[in-house]
Amino acid sequence: MRSFTRADLDKFYDWRNDPYVARFQGWPLPYSRDRANDFMVEMETATPGIPGQWYQIAITKKDTAELIGDCAFCPRQSGIQTEIGYTLARPYHGYGYATQAVRGLVDYLFDQQKMHRISAYCDTRNSPSFKLLQKLGFRLEGHYIENYKDGNMWASEYHYAMLRREWEARG
Ligand SMILES: CC(C)(COP(=O)(O)OP(=O)(O)OC[C@H]1O[C@@H](n2cnc3c(N)ncnc32)[C@H](O)[C@@H]1OP(=O)(O)O)[C@@H](O)C(=O)NCCC(=O)NCCS
Image 1: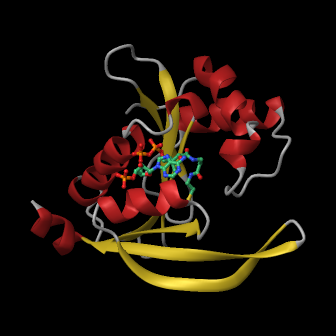
Image 2: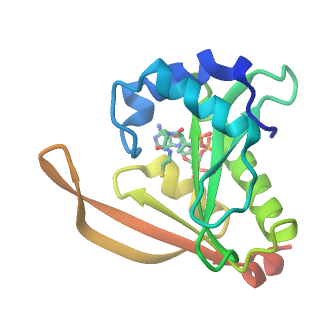
């Protein structure tokens, strides 16, 4: 896990524009190169842990150092609760990489950022995402029925969360 640099632009741009990867994400397609570039510039100088601002962290493979995805967090106004998100480029799905990365992110958020609670939303059809959360010990706190529009259809979301003491109890 490391900070983004401008050298990451091409790969980041590619996965942001992959319809399969973007299927349950908040960004609209096509995702322009200018927007990807602005994002890289912003992340180079961004400070993690500012309430209301997403901070994105690059995920790389340990053996080859290649960039494979990102994970992110956005603290609430209190600064001690945060939402998280995560995305991998399609060739890297299904190998357990996101589970490893999000475990690292959760460690960082509880240990370094001193968070009290971490939460995540996912579309109820996004089984890789909610399986990952369940595997790491997140609890289902909410099931929102048809709470957002996916094109012309209503879609539903799960809301998962974990407290610091629950993470510590897992050891
Ligand atoms: C969600 C995402 C990050 C998971 O990444 P990943 O590295 O493939 O996840 P893992 O390999 O760690 O697997 C997590 C769980 O999902 C399962 N899974 C992975 N790919 C799957 C698929 N295509 N269909 C069903 N289950 C799948 C795994 O088997 C695992 O569950 P298990 O331990 O019970 O077997 C990845 O699918 C992704 O980037 N999706 C697009 C972006 C996205 O939707 N992000 C989440 C927004 S809430």
